[in-house]
Image (tube, rainbow, N blue to C red; front, side, top):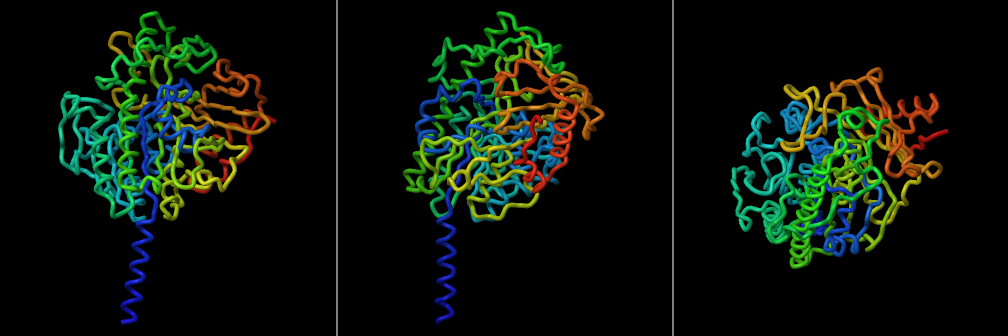
Length: 505
Protein backbone atom coordinates (compact mmCIF):
# COMPACT_ATOMS: atom_id res chain seq x y z
CA UNK A 1 0.00 0.00 0.00
CA UNK A 2 2.88 2.38 0.83
CA UNK A 3 4.44 1.71 -2.58
CA UNK A 4 1.10 2.43 -4.25
CA UNK A 5 0.79 5.76 -2.38
CA UNK A 6 4.33 6.74 -3.43
CA UNK A 7 3.67 5.92 -7.09
CA UNK A 8 0.37 7.81 -6.97
CA UNK A 9 2.10 10.83 -5.42
CA UNK A 10 4.78 10.84 -8.12
CA UNK A 11 2.14 10.67 -10.85
CA UNK A 12 0.16 13.45 -9.19
CA UNK A 13 3.21 15.71 -8.90
CA UNK A 14 4.19 14.99 -12.51
CA UNK A 15 0.71 15.88 -13.73
CA UNK A 16 0.74 19.08 -11.69
CA UNK A 17 4.11 20.02 -13.16
CA UNK A 18 2.79 19.52 -16.69
CA UNK A 19 -0.32 21.61 -16.04
CA UNK A 20 1.77 24.40 -14.49
CA UNK A 21 3.86 24.80 -17.63
CA UNK A 22 3.11 28.14 -19.27
CA UNK A 23 0.99 28.29 -22.39
CA UNK A 24 2.78 29.82 -25.37
CA UNK A 25 1.06 31.61 -28.26
CA UNK A 26 3.06 32.77 -31.28
CA UNK A 27 1.32 35.18 -33.69
CA UNK A 28 3.27 35.68 -36.91
CA UNK A 29 2.32 38.24 -39.54
CA UNK A 30 3.51 38.12 -43.15
CA UNK A 31 5.62 40.99 -44.61
CA UNK A 32 4.99 43.44 -41.76
CA UNK A 33 7.32 46.42 -41.59
CA UNK A 34 8.55 48.27 -38.52
CA UNK A 35 10.66 51.07 -39.92
CA UNK A 36 7.79 52.40 -42.05
CA UNK A 37 5.42 52.69 -39.11
CA UNK A 38 2.82 49.93 -39.44
CA UNK A 39 2.63 49.49 -35.66
CA UNK A 40 1.51 53.10 -35.27
CA UNK A 41 -1.81 52.26 -36.96
CA UNK A 42 -2.69 49.46 -34.53
CA UNK A 43 -3.99 50.84 -31.20
CA UNK A 44 -5.49 47.51 -30.07
CA UNK A 45 -2.16 45.79 -30.59
CA UNK A 46 -0.55 48.48 -28.46
CA UNK A 47 -3.03 48.07 -25.62
CA UNK A 48 -2.96 44.26 -25.66
CA UNK A 49 0.74 43.71 -26.27
CA UNK A 50 3.06 46.74 -26.07
CA UNK A 51 1.42 48.22 -22.97
CA UNK A 52 1.34 44.79 -21.31
CA UNK A 53 4.73 43.45 -22.27
CA UNK A 54 8.25 43.85 -23.61
CA UNK A 55 9.08 45.46 -26.96
CA UNK A 56 12.32 44.40 -28.64
CA UNK A 57 13.79 47.47 -30.30
CA UNK A 58 16.40 45.35 -32.08
CA UNK A 59 14.49 42.41 -33.53
CA UNK A 60 15.70 41.15 -36.90
CA UNK A 61 15.31 38.27 -39.33
CA UNK A 62 18.29 36.37 -40.67
CA UNK A 63 16.86 36.17 -44.18
CA UNK A 64 14.37 38.64 -45.74
CA UNK A 65 12.03 36.35 -47.67
CA UNK A 66 9.07 34.20 -46.63
CA UNK A 67 9.85 30.49 -46.90
CA UNK A 68 13.51 30.60 -45.82
CA UNK A 69 12.62 32.88 -42.91
CA UNK A 70 9.74 30.68 -41.77
CA UNK A 71 12.07 27.70 -42.02
CA UNK A 72 14.52 29.54 -39.75
CA UNK A 73 11.74 30.34 -37.28
CA UNK A 74 10.58 26.72 -37.16
CA UNK A 75 14.05 25.19 -36.82
CA UNK A 76 16.10 27.86 -35.03
CA UNK A 77 18.67 27.61 -37.81
CA UNK A 78 20.33 29.87 -40.33
CA UNK A 79 19.44 29.29 -43.98
CA UNK A 80 22.80 27.69 -44.69
CA UNK A 81 21.90 24.96 -42.18
CA UNK A 82 18.26 24.23 -43.05
CA UNK A 83 18.87 24.57 -46.84
CA UNK A 84 15.58 26.26 -47.75
CA UNK A 85 17.08 28.93 -49.98
CA UNK A 86 14.09 30.58 -51.65
CA UNK A 87 10.32 30.27 -52.10
CA UNK A 88 10.41 27.62 -54.84
CA UNK A 89 10.38 23.86 -54.37
CA UNK A 90 13.56 23.70 -56.46
CA UNK A 91 15.25 25.89 -53.86
CA UNK A 92 14.02 23.80 -50.93
CA UNK A 93 10.68 25.36 -49.93
CA UNK A 94 8.61 22.50 -48.48
CA UNK A 95 10.55 20.19 -50.75
CA UNK A 96 11.32 16.54 -49.96
CA UNK A 97 14.68 17.78 -48.67
CA UNK A 98 12.87 19.93 -46.09
CA UNK A 99 10.99 16.93 -44.75
CA UNK A 100 14.13 14.75 -44.70
CA UNK A 101 16.41 17.30 -43.06
CA UNK A 102 14.16 19.41 -40.89
CA UNK A 103 10.57 18.43 -40.28
CA UNK A 104 11.38 16.16 -37.34
CA UNK A 105 13.48 18.94 -35.78
CA UNK A 106 11.09 21.89 -35.75
CA UNK A 107 9.53 23.48 -32.69
CA UNK A 108 6.42 21.31 -33.21
CA UNK A 109 7.92 17.91 -32.32
CA UNK A 110 10.06 19.39 -29.53
CA UNK A 111 7.13 21.18 -27.90
CA UNK A 112 5.06 18.02 -28.18
CA UNK A 113 7.80 16.06 -26.41
CA UNK A 114 7.84 18.78 -23.74
CA UNK A 115 4.26 17.89 -22.88
CA UNK A 116 2.38 20.47 -24.92
CA UNK A 117 -0.78 20.17 -26.95
CA UNK A 118 0.31 21.87 -30.16
CA UNK A 119 -1.74 23.73 -32.76
CA UNK A 120 -0.74 25.24 -36.09
CA UNK A 121 -3.14 27.70 -37.74
CA UNK A 122 -2.46 29.58 -40.98
CA UNK A 123 0.43 29.72 -43.41
CA UNK A 124 3.10 27.05 -43.00
CA UNK A 125 5.55 27.17 -45.93
CA UNK A 126 4.83 28.71 -49.33
CA UNK A 127 4.60 25.41 -51.20
CA UNK A 128 2.84 23.29 -48.62
CA UNK A 129 0.42 20.95 -50.39
CA UNK A 130 1.23 22.38 -53.82
CA UNK A 131 1.96 20.24 -56.89
CA UNK A 132 5.64 19.46 -57.03
CA UNK A 133 6.19 19.58 -53.28
CA UNK A 134 5.89 15.82 -52.95
CA UNK A 135 2.95 15.93 -50.55
CA UNK A 136 -0.72 16.86 -50.66
CA UNK A 137 -2.94 18.27 -47.94
CA UNK A 138 -3.16 14.91 -46.20
CA UNK A 139 0.38 15.44 -44.94
CA UNK A 140 0.56 16.65 -41.33
CA UNK A 141 4.12 17.41 -40.21
CA UNK A 142 5.17 15.55 -37.05
CA UNK A 143 4.52 17.08 -33.67
CA UNK A 144 1.29 18.98 -34.33
CA UNK A 145 -1.84 17.94 -32.41
CA UNK A 146 -4.10 20.33 -34.32
CA UNK A 147 -3.33 21.15 -37.95
CA UNK A 148 -5.30 23.83 -39.83
CA UNK A 149 -2.99 25.04 -42.54
CA UNK A 150 -3.19 26.96 -45.80
CA UNK A 151 -2.27 25.34 -49.09
CA UNK A 152 0.44 27.45 -50.70
CA UNK A 153 1.04 31.16 -50.17
CA UNK A 154 -0.92 33.93 -48.45
CA UNK A 155 -4.54 34.34 -49.54
CA UNK A 156 -7.64 35.92 -48.05
CA UNK A 157 -10.35 34.26 -50.19
CA UNK A 158 -10.62 31.30 -52.59
CA UNK A 159 -8.13 28.97 -50.94
CA UNK A 160 -7.85 25.46 -49.55
CA UNK A 161 -6.62 24.31 -46.17
CA UNK A 162 -5.58 21.05 -44.62
CA UNK A 163 -7.99 20.52 -41.74
CA UNK A 164 -6.39 17.64 -39.86
CA UNK A 165 -5.18 16.24 -43.19
CA UNK A 166 -8.51 16.65 -44.99
CA UNK A 167 -8.80 19.18 -47.80
CA UNK A 168 -11.27 21.97 -47.03
CA UNK A 169 -12.04 24.51 -49.75
CA UNK A 170 -13.16 28.09 -49.15
CA UNK A 171 -14.72 30.67 -51.44
CA UNK A 172 -15.25 34.41 -51.30
CA UNK A 173 -17.98 34.81 -48.68
CA UNK A 174 -16.63 37.13 -46.00
CA UNK A 175 -18.54 35.54 -43.11
CA UNK A 176 -17.43 32.02 -43.98
CA UNK A 177 -14.12 32.43 -45.77
CA UNK A 178 -12.03 35.47 -44.82
CA UNK A 179 -8.86 33.64 -43.87
CA UNK A 180 -7.70 35.80 -40.95
CA UNK A 181 -11.12 35.40 -39.34
CA UNK A 182 -11.25 31.68 -40.07
CA UNK A 183 -7.98 30.97 -38.28
CA UNK A 184 -9.12 33.28 -35.47
CA UNK A 185 -12.14 31.07 -34.90
CA UNK A 186 -10.06 27.89 -35.07
CA UNK A 187 -7.52 29.28 -32.60
CA UNK A 188 -10.22 30.26 -30.12
CA UNK A 189 -11.80 26.82 -30.39
CA UNK A 190 -8.43 25.20 -29.73
CA UNK A 191 -8.04 27.25 -26.54
CA UNK A 192 -11.54 26.37 -25.37
CA UNK A 193 -10.91 22.65 -25.88
CA UNK A 194 -7.48 22.51 -24.25
CA UNK A 195 -8.03 23.21 -20.56
CA UNK A 196 -6.47 19.90 -19.51
CA UNK A 197 -2.93 20.52 -20.81
CA UNK A 198 -0.49 23.31 -21.61
CA UNK A 199 -0.82 24.57 -25.17
CA UNK A 200 1.58 25.83 -27.79
CA UNK A 201 -0.07 27.73 -30.65
CA UNK A 202 1.53 28.94 -33.86
CA UNK A 203 -0.87 31.36 -35.60
CA UNK A 204 0.38 32.60 -38.97
CA UNK A 205 -1.84 35.23 -40.58
CA UNK A 206 -1.79 36.18 -44.28
CA UNK A 207 -1.75 39.90 -43.46
CA UNK A 208 -0.40 42.21 -44.68
CA UNK A 209 0.99 40.16 -47.61
CA UNK A 210 -0.24 40.87 -51.12
CA UNK A 211 -2.95 40.94 -52.35
CA UNK A 212 -3.59 42.69 -49.01
CA UNK A 213 -7.37 42.29 -49.19
CA UNK A 214 -9.01 44.01 -46.20
CA UNK A 215 -12.15 42.75 -44.51
CA UNK A 216 -15.26 44.65 -45.74
CA UNK A 217 -15.67 46.60 -42.50
CA UNK A 218 -12.12 47.91 -42.77
CA UNK A 219 -12.09 48.88 -46.44
CA UNK A 220 -11.16 52.54 -46.84
CA UNK A 221 -10.37 52.87 -43.12
CA UNK A 222 -7.01 54.38 -44.10
CA UNK A 223 -8.07 56.03 -47.32
CA UNK A 224 -5.78 58.91 -48.15
CA UNK A 225 -2.86 57.48 -46.19
CA UNK A 226 0.30 57.46 -48.28
CA UNK A 227 3.45 55.40 -47.96
CA UNK A 228 6.03 57.22 -45.80
CA UNK A 229 8.20 59.56 -47.86
CA UNK A 230 11.43 58.63 -46.14
CA UNK A 231 14.71 60.14 -47.43
CA UNK A 232 15.28 56.88 -49.32
CA UNK A 233 11.82 56.99 -50.96
CA UNK A 234 12.22 56.93 -54.76
CA UNK A 235 15.90 57.71 -54.18
CA UNK A 236 17.94 57.04 -57.31
CA UNK A 237 20.99 55.45 -55.72
CA UNK A 238 23.80 54.71 -58.16
CA UNK A 239 26.26 53.27 -55.64
CA UNK A 240 24.25 50.14 -54.74
CA UNK A 241 24.21 46.66 -56.24
CA UNK A 242 22.76 46.31 -59.70
CA UNK A 243 19.19 45.33 -58.75
CA UNK A 244 18.85 48.79 -57.19
CA UNK A 245 21.17 50.92 -59.32
CA UNK A 246 20.35 49.45 -62.75
CA UNK A 247 17.37 47.11 -62.42
CA UNK A 248 14.89 49.47 -60.75
CA UNK A 249 13.59 52.56 -62.59
CA UNK A 250 12.52 55.74 -60.83
CA UNK A 251 8.85 55.45 -59.88
CA UNK A 252 6.39 57.36 -62.03
CA UNK A 253 3.31 59.16 -60.71
CA UNK A 254 1.22 56.13 -61.65
CA UNK A 255 3.51 53.75 -59.77
CA UNK A 256 3.57 56.02 -56.72
CA UNK A 257 -0.23 55.90 -56.66
CA UNK A 258 -0.19 52.10 -56.68
CA UNK A 259 2.37 51.98 -53.88
CA UNK A 260 0.20 54.30 -51.79
CA UNK A 261 -2.83 52.12 -52.45
CA UNK A 262 -0.90 49.03 -51.35
CA UNK A 263 0.24 50.82 -48.18
CA UNK A 264 -3.37 51.68 -47.31
CA UNK A 265 -4.61 48.14 -47.91
CA UNK A 266 -1.78 46.61 -45.90
CA UNK A 267 -2.75 48.65 -42.86
CA UNK A 268 -6.41 47.72 -43.31
CA UNK A 269 -5.63 43.98 -43.39
CA UNK A 270 -3.75 44.34 -40.10
CA UNK A 271 -6.92 45.53 -38.38
CA UNK A 272 -8.25 41.98 -38.69
CA UNK A 273 -5.05 40.73 -37.06
CA UNK A 274 -5.90 43.00 -34.13
CA UNK A 275 -9.31 41.30 -33.98
CA UNK A 276 -7.63 37.89 -33.96
CA UNK A 277 -5.30 38.90 -31.16
CA UNK A 278 -8.16 40.36 -29.14
CA UNK A 279 -10.17 37.14 -29.55
CA UNK A 280 -7.22 34.96 -28.50
CA UNK A 281 -6.53 37.09 -25.41
CA UNK A 282 -10.24 37.01 -24.57
CA UNK A 283 -10.41 33.22 -24.88
CA UNK A 284 -7.35 32.77 -22.67
CA UNK A 285 -8.86 35.11 -20.10
CA UNK A 286 -12.17 33.26 -20.18
CA UNK A 287 -10.33 29.99 -19.55
CA UNK A 288 -8.51 31.70 -16.65
CA UNK A 289 -5.08 30.93 -18.12
CA UNK A 290 -4.05 34.33 -19.50
CA UNK A 291 -1.80 35.01 -16.51
CA UNK A 292 0.10 31.80 -17.28
CA UNK A 293 0.47 32.45 -21.01
CA UNK A 294 3.29 33.97 -23.04
CA UNK A 295 2.08 35.71 -26.19
CA UNK A 296 4.58 36.62 -28.92
CA UNK A 297 3.83 38.99 -31.80
CA UNK A 298 6.32 38.87 -34.67
CA UNK A 299 6.73 39.02 -38.48
CA UNK A 300 8.62 36.77 -40.88
CA UNK A 301 10.48 39.81 -42.29
CA UNK A 302 10.01 43.48 -43.06
CA UNK A 303 9.00 45.27 -46.23
CA UNK A 304 9.87 48.25 -48.37
CA UNK A 305 7.42 50.58 -50.09
CA UNK A 306 9.23 52.88 -52.51
CA UNK A 307 12.63 52.87 -50.83
CA UNK A 308 15.39 53.07 -53.46
CA UNK A 309 12.62 53.03 -56.10
CA UNK A 310 11.62 49.47 -55.12
CA UNK A 311 7.84 49.38 -55.09
CA UNK A 312 6.54 46.79 -52.64
CA UNK A 313 8.87 43.96 -51.76
CA UNK A 314 11.61 42.55 -49.52
CA UNK A 315 14.73 40.49 -50.49
CA UNK A 316 17.18 43.29 -49.67
CA UNK A 317 19.63 43.67 -46.76
CA UNK A 318 18.38 47.11 -45.74
CA UNK A 319 16.70 47.88 -42.41
CA UNK A 320 13.17 48.07 -43.85
CA UNK A 321 13.43 44.41 -44.87
CA UNK A 322 15.34 42.83 -41.97
CA UNK A 323 14.03 44.72 -38.90
CA UNK A 324 10.74 43.30 -37.57
CA UNK A 325 8.27 43.76 -34.73
CA UNK A 326 8.71 41.53 -31.69
CA UNK A 327 6.51 42.10 -28.65
CA UNK A 328 6.10 39.61 -25.80
CA UNK A 329 3.78 39.56 -22.80
CA UNK A 330 3.45 36.93 -20.11
CA UNK A 331 4.34 35.87 -16.56
CA UNK A 332 7.44 37.58 -15.21
CA UNK A 333 7.59 40.19 -17.99
CA UNK A 334 7.38 43.81 -16.91
CA UNK A 335 4.57 45.69 -18.70
CA UNK A 336 5.25 48.60 -21.05
CA UNK A 337 9.00 48.05 -21.24
CA UNK A 338 11.54 48.15 -24.05
CA UNK A 339 14.82 46.32 -24.44
CA UNK A 340 17.81 46.98 -26.66
CA UNK A 341 18.73 43.29 -26.56
CA UNK A 342 19.21 41.55 -29.88
CA UNK A 343 16.44 39.16 -30.94
CA UNK A 344 16.60 37.10 -34.13
CA UNK A 345 14.13 34.93 -36.04
CA UNK A 346 16.35 31.93 -35.24
CA UNK A 347 15.81 32.67 -31.51
CA UNK A 348 12.09 31.86 -31.54
CA UNK A 349 12.36 28.06 -31.39
CA UNK A 350 15.00 27.96 -28.62
CA UNK A 351 13.04 30.54 -26.62
CA UNK A 352 9.85 28.49 -26.77
CA UNK A 353 11.68 25.31 -25.76
CA UNK A 354 13.42 27.07 -22.88
CA UNK A 355 10.12 28.47 -21.58
CA UNK A 356 8.71 24.95 -21.84
CA UNK A 357 11.57 23.53 -19.78
CA UNK A 358 12.89 21.40 -22.65
CA UNK A 359 16.65 21.09 -23.29
CA UNK A 360 17.85 23.07 -26.30
CA UNK A 361 19.12 20.97 -29.23
CA UNK A 362 22.83 21.48 -29.87
CA UNK A 363 22.31 22.13 -33.59
CA UNK A 364 20.08 25.19 -33.09
CA UNK A 365 21.91 28.34 -34.21
CA UNK A 366 19.63 30.69 -32.28
CA UNK A 367 19.65 31.39 -28.56
CA UNK A 368 16.92 31.55 -25.94
CA UNK A 369 15.54 34.99 -25.10
CA UNK A 370 14.09 33.75 -21.81
CA UNK A 371 16.71 35.54 -19.63
CA UNK A 372 15.92 38.81 -21.42
CA UNK A 373 12.16 38.29 -21.07
CA UNK A 374 12.44 37.74 -17.33
CA UNK A 375 14.93 40.53 -16.74
CA UNK A 376 17.64 38.12 -15.64
CA UNK A 377 20.23 39.18 -18.18
CA UNK A 378 21.17 42.67 -19.43
CA UNK A 379 21.28 43.41 -23.14
CA UNK A 380 24.64 42.80 -24.83
CA UNK A 381 26.44 46.05 -25.65
CA UNK A 382 28.09 44.48 -28.69
CA UNK A 383 26.54 42.02 -31.09
CA UNK A 384 26.74 40.82 -34.66
CA UNK A 385 24.77 38.39 -36.78
CA UNK A 386 24.45 37.13 -40.34
CA UNK A 387 21.80 38.02 -42.90
CA UNK A 388 21.65 35.58 -45.83
CA UNK A 389 19.72 35.73 -49.06
CA UNK A 390 20.09 33.29 -51.93
CA UNK A 391 18.62 34.61 -55.18
CA UNK A 392 16.25 32.54 -57.26
CA UNK A 393 18.19 32.91 -60.51
CA UNK A 394 19.18 29.26 -60.64
CA UNK A 395 15.63 27.90 -60.49
CA UNK A 396 14.62 26.13 -63.72
CA UNK A 397 12.75 28.51 -66.01
CA UNK A 398 13.26 31.48 -63.73
CA UNK A 399 15.12 34.54 -64.86
CA UNK A 400 13.93 37.78 -63.34
CA UNK A 401 10.87 38.22 -61.15
CA UNK A 402 8.49 41.02 -62.05
CA UNK A 403 5.27 42.18 -60.51
CA UNK A 404 2.56 43.36 -62.86
CA UNK A 405 0.78 43.26 -65.13
CA UNK A 406 0.16 46.99 -65.40
CA UNK A 407 3.34 48.39 -63.89
CA UNK A 408 5.87 45.58 -63.81
CA UNK A 409 9.03 46.07 -61.77
CA UNK A 410 12.06 43.99 -60.99
CA UNK A 411 12.26 42.58 -57.49
CA UNK A 412 14.67 39.69 -57.95
CA UNK A 413 16.92 38.34 -60.65
CA UNK A 414 20.22 36.57 -61.16
CA UNK A 415 23.16 37.78 -59.06
CA UNK A 416 21.01 38.85 -56.12
CA UNK A 417 22.65 36.51 -53.60
CA UNK A 418 24.19 38.32 -50.65
CA UNK A 419 25.67 37.72 -47.21
CA UNK A 420 25.55 40.63 -44.77
CA UNK A 421 27.15 41.24 -41.42
CA UNK A 422 24.86 43.38 -39.22
CA UNK A 423 26.67 44.80 -36.18
CA UNK A 424 26.26 47.03 -33.17
CA UNK A 425 28.89 48.23 -30.72
CA UNK A 426 29.11 51.10 -28.29
CA UNK A 427 31.93 52.79 -30.20
CA UNK A 428 30.60 52.77 -33.75
CA UNK A 429 26.88 52.17 -33.32
CA UNK A 430 24.94 50.22 -35.96
CA UNK A 431 26.75 49.04 -39.08
CA UNK A 432 26.15 46.64 -41.95
CA UNK A 433 28.60 45.22 -44.45
CA UNK A 434 27.33 43.19 -47.44
CA UNK A 435 28.97 40.96 -50.01
CA UNK A 436 27.03 40.42 -53.26
CA UNK A 437 27.80 37.36 -55.36
CA UNK A 438 27.98 36.81 -59.10
CA UNK A 439 26.16 33.49 -58.80
CA UNK A 440 22.97 32.26 -57.17
CA UNK A 441 24.31 28.71 -57.07
CA UNK A 442 25.03 27.14 -53.68
CA UNK A 443 27.70 26.90 -52.39
CA UNK A 444 29.34 30.17 -53.34
CA UNK A 445 32.94 31.10 -52.71
CA UNK A 446 34.65 34.35 -51.77
CA UNK A 447 35.98 34.53 -55.30
CA UNK A 448 32.36 35.01 -56.47
CA UNK A 449 32.02 38.38 -54.68
CA UNK A 450 31.46 41.08 -57.27
CA UNK A 451 30.13 44.00 -55.21
CA UNK A 452 30.20 45.31 -51.62
CA UNK A 453 28.18 47.77 -49.59
CA UNK A 454 28.87 49.29 -46.18
CA UNK A 455 26.76 51.66 -44.06
CA UNK A 456 27.18 53.11 -40.62
CA UNK A 457 23.46 53.19 -39.89
CA UNK A 458 23.89 55.38 -36.83
CA UNK A 459 25.36 58.08 -39.08
CA UNK A 460 23.40 57.28 -42.26
CA UNK A 461 20.07 56.10 -40.85
CA UNK A 462 18.41 55.52 -44.23
CA UNK A 463 21.48 53.84 -45.81
CA UNK A 464 21.57 56.38 -48.61
CA UNK A 465 25.28 56.40 -49.44
CA UNK A 466 27.43 53.31 -49.84
CA UNK A 467 30.54 54.05 -47.76
CA UNK A 468 32.50 50.93 -48.65
CA UNK A 469 35.27 53.12 -50.12
CA UNK A 470 35.92 54.52 -46.63
CA UNK A 471 37.04 51.09 -45.38
CA UNK A 472 40.65 50.07 -45.37
CA UNK A 473 41.70 46.82 -47.00
CA UNK A 474 42.25 45.39 -43.52
CA UNK A 475 38.74 46.32 -42.40
CA UNK A 476 37.18 44.87 -45.54
CA UNK A 477 39.13 41.64 -45.07
CA UNK A 478 38.05 41.44 -41.41
CA UNK A 479 34.39 41.90 -42.29
CA UNK A 480 34.52 39.32 -45.07
CA UNK A 481 36.28 36.76 -42.89
CA UNK A 482 33.65 37.23 -40.19
CA UNK A 483 30.86 36.84 -42.72
CA UNK A 484 32.41 33.65 -44.02
CA UNK A 485 32.86 32.21 -40.53
CA UNK A 486 29.21 32.97 -39.81
CA UNK A 487 28.20 31.38 -43.11
CA UNK A 488 29.95 28.18 -42.02
CA UNK A 489 28.77 28.21 -38.39
CA UNK A 490 26.39 25.81 -36.72
CA UNK A 491 25.00 25.63 -33.19
CA UNK A 492 27.47 26.75 -30.52
CA UNK A 493 29.91 28.24 -33.03
CA UNK A 494 27.13 30.65 -34.11
CA UNK A 495 26.50 31.53 -30.46
CA UNK A 496 30.17 32.33 -29.82
CA UNK A 497 30.40 34.69 -32.78
CA UNK A 498 27.22 36.57 -31.95
CA UNK A 499 28.56 38.57 -29.01
CA UNK A 500 31.96 39.42 -30.41
CA UNK A 501 32.98 42.94 -31.26
CA UNK A 502 33.79 43.31 -34.93
CA UNK A 503 33.90 46.91 -36.03
CA UNK A 504 36.05 49.52 -37.68
CA UNK A 505 39.51 49.80 -36.15
